[in-house]
Amino acid sequence: MTAAVRTPINRKRVRDHFTYAFWKYALLVIIGVFGWNLIYSVTAYRPPKEKKVDVYLVTSAVESEATERLAALAAPAFPDMEALNFMSIAMGTTDDYYANIQLTTYIGAQEGDIYLMPWDRFQTFAQSGLFISLDEWIADGSIDLRGIDPGQGRLTVTDDGVEASEAASSHIYGIPAETLYDMLDQGVDNRGLWIGVTAYSGNLPNAVKMADWLIARFQAEKPQWLVDYEAAQPAPATDDGTLPSY
Image 1 (cartoon, rainbow, N blue to C red):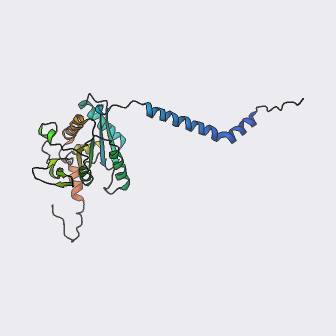
Image 2: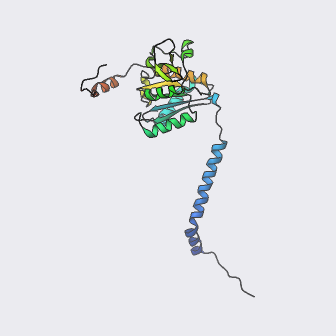
């Protein structure tokens, strides 16, 4: 009869076990965390489209505290909404490759009810049919421009694209956010931005209401510090060496 080999558990054996098998436990922890996150992301409650408004700010980086503050400011005006989301796409310059990829990805996934973005990006997406004409809601008072001139936001969109026009066939697709200077106090650089409502919005009435709220809440006189700052900036150079005319 062969005697059984005994392998008593002692401190050395336990230490050796964890030394050589540590990666197995680490892998189990990673799999557990990943699995829990996956279950949460799949089962977490998401408000239906008609119960939320998503606003994307395409400008220089906006901190999360600022976007949360904007949502809190808007909440009293939208008591029936379950979620008001302000999100930032950090675009330092309009040729920022990563920011443009991110922006195109969100739009391709039909994310966002309202976008605030620089003019050249706005015009490009208006040409592709991303934004809807706002004439109807401006005419019935749902959006009060409060003296804002839409200017080049009045466009004629055709099958061949979009062109600026003052003709009777033109419509207002974008509202300049240039005078919404109180956004600066919330950490959002509003300069050069345009407001557009997406054609695929699943909550069009409240997207229109949000456009009106943004104008009503943040339109203000240009702050003196900004006047002084802009006056102190050197004039941009021109190709022929002459000073630009304004």
